[in-house]
Length: 274
Length: 312
Image 1 (cartoon, each protein chain N blue to C red):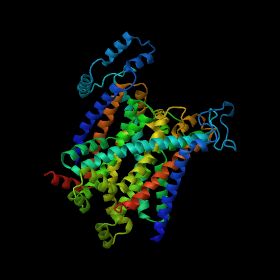
Image 2: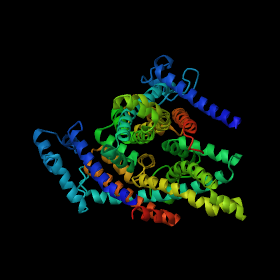
Image 3: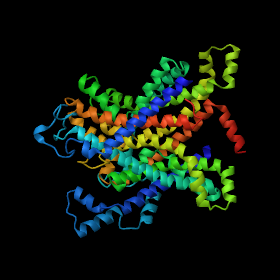
Image 4: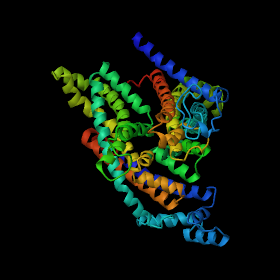
């Protein structure tokens, strides 16, 4: 048993460390990047990895390593935007539904049912398609399709703690509804939300890259991992490294968030066993 | 449950199609102007007004939506703003490739799920189990476009075994359906494994083992059947998604399916086609939910009995 626990911590630690590194890279991309990510030197195009250009240069002579660092910034920015949006909307809807119950609950949960019956990817695509590409629009589309997961969990937890003694005590003490919700219900919801946030983040990152690949995400020349892959495609036969480095960046980020989410789930959700 | 889900989808259809209409009326940029430019004309005040009238954009939102709805109920989805063809015809042409891709990836993913899921559960906590779990975690974390590029790089560029992209023969089908099938199957194998392990802990499996059945017999005859129920549900939503056309994979492989049509419609702001696409996808999803519920009854007769009890 002790052995199992130790292993779990290793996975957790590794994923947290990876995410921390990527996050720092994203924040300090300006200082860490050896070159301007968007300035190409055509005389230095398609250079293989070397001392000067660690990950080589792309078809416009831009430094791939610098672009990957700045790509991390884009990825984290979008993931944080979506997470904050989903958190605010989902928590507000979930707590309101669970705490008040009755017709309010009914209305909110019908909306949640409606949205989750439809595949999120198709819905996000259609929304982005209509309101147009771009970072902000993509975030809006993703928030629209994924707040429901947050709302469902928050509502469930709220329902289960609503009748517990400390909430009743707070009520007797004369605390207003809003205070009770934020002081007593929210702390109980947070651990489970962390699991969803971690697991969802890996899907936001995949989706962002996918949309960029389709030309519906971030606009050129900004660096984004999915777009780097898409740009590398015509050159992939002879310049495999152009495909390799951004691919690794995506895989590492997505895997770290997936493992983090699963480890947190093992920890916080005793009913879930693998 | 079954009735609730079937009832909710037409409502969903109304909401989403209305939403599409609503969004088109607030999008930045003039749709008529864009289309005129695309057709090579000069957008002047008169031509824009004429185009607006031709597209019906001069009328109010509700009037447009009402007309679209009435026509859609008569299977008339309007005409494409770009090609001028009936939307229903364009969709019908694209459905066959998407069906092929869906079918093939479904077969592959079911095989992978069943094989890896049962093997991991049977060899629980051994090296086999760990290898399968590790493999499926990695497959789960590779975005599908990445897997597509990796397979293309090796099988099409380096070794030249399969054609690069395109549509038309069985060979063209193999790479895209492998990408989708592996991606889906790996995730579901993990689900099936934990579902079987849950079932193996139950009383009826203990009873079967006490009766003298081997572990494999108990797993196959008793645990697996119950373990499959959540898997069938999850496959249901996957098929719904696949039938909408996997946009990314269809685009990477130049597969002329629904997903590619949707992207083309998006890029050219072809709203009637996009509307028709949403309608199509939703109808598919309703159909899949129905089939999943019927499958439930086949796998687990109790579900039907329970449900008829609840609903009187």
